[in-house]
Length: 238
Length: 243
Image (tube, rainbow over all chains, first blue to last red; front, side, top):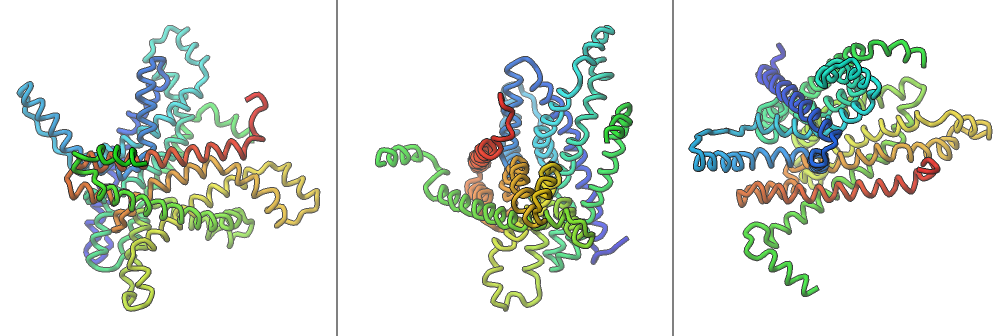
């Protein structure tokens, strides 16, 4: 293993923290994105309003500001709720908002808004005749979603999801600002201690590029999977 | 005016946090943010135009370095780039004794360099895409008129590419505004820096950060509407006739 003046192993741990934050917030963002997309496509005006408000507000405010709001303000807010629960219902719980939770929740919330837009477009791109055919076969709504809507929607959503993931990955660097020991923070600490920024920052940058390249490859594989049945037609068009 | 002043004083009285003093911090922060974002966008734009043309060049030794530059700057977090340039400059042996130190000890210039290089990379790719999307017919028409490559670039390709790039560039401007929040990490008192200061002083996270979030929201909407107006003006000829 590369030693990097003794910081090598710690940087590797930091890289794992970065990956954990990225993957967990991706999951949260995907769930929120699906919910937002269905709220935006629903006929109920209230859901529609809430989803629009959510995506507008999130996309108008810097990620770092939201993260600090949640990290510094989140504990106070959560304490108020748990205090209230304690006095009203005698339920004693304690929730600790640490930097990991604050980071994952903020990044998940931010990218949930972007994923929502991607999913919404993808859902609209699925031919409505397909859904009607499913209904004609007597499929339940859930079955239609699982067997017909979702697989075809993913074909349209994947390029956007891939882009969002790349941006999300880079956004994880911000958790270092609120104090989580991801690889950026460790590199920054090492830089301050040794006065050698290039020795630490360049390997970290390379790791980001590596993760990005691997994800590009995975997205391409997924794309191939969800494009089954469309591949040949595309090739003919070119 | 006096009425407004009285109204404002009354609004602020009985409020421990938003005094004229702290609002001054926010105002200075706003100035810092706008200066940083505006300057880096302008310089980045100027850099991006020749880079985008080079990126589409047929010669490999011109094309590849530009591609490598955009790939690295778009593939790594801006925070890393900022750290690299900020610490890279600060920790150069003996720099503190040279005349350059007077300029560089202020974190503003390293941040400006990092932001400029970052936005130039994104803008290069946006323009490159827009240039590539030029309709073949336009190029063929220019050739049929006997235009040289330079003249064709100047009169035909660039004007239409600029228009096509407008929506994507609007997003980049908003992205830059939001990304500039990390300037506060290297001790710059921008909007976010002001919010952090107010938070630390009064231990009032909601007031400090919600207020600054509202300012960012207003700035974002201002940029959004500006670009929508520009699109309406400059892309009017592309609208469907009955649209």
